[in-house]
Length: 130
Image 1 (tube, rainbow, N blue to C red):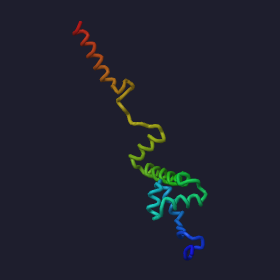
Image 2 (image 1 turned 180 degrees about the horizontal axis):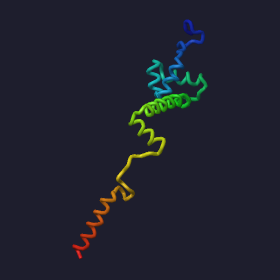
Image 3 (image 1 turned 90 degrees about the horizontal axis):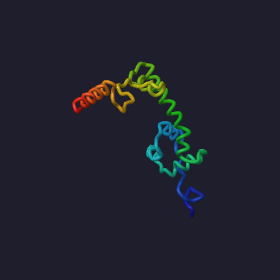
């Protein structure tokens, strides 16, 4: 007797909600997180993504996470265009090469004023020691 109701024997096949798995992939969930949400084992997820034509879970995530990234970018852009100052600044830095104004130049972090002061002090100490 191989098992009641299962002609091949073994445990009954567990089906998972592939649409939900895709949504979890869009928000960059890990395989462990997906397994917890779907209440299945990692092996079950691996089997399901292979049956869906992917070689592995990372390949599945890569295929579906771009939709989530696009949605996130769209939401960020909307916030910026709606006047969110923080998002405007961040998007400008990320996409337009903008940066905060800085008093630091290429003198290894020394400002021009401080460099002048050091030069003045150095010149003065040479006179004192001469």
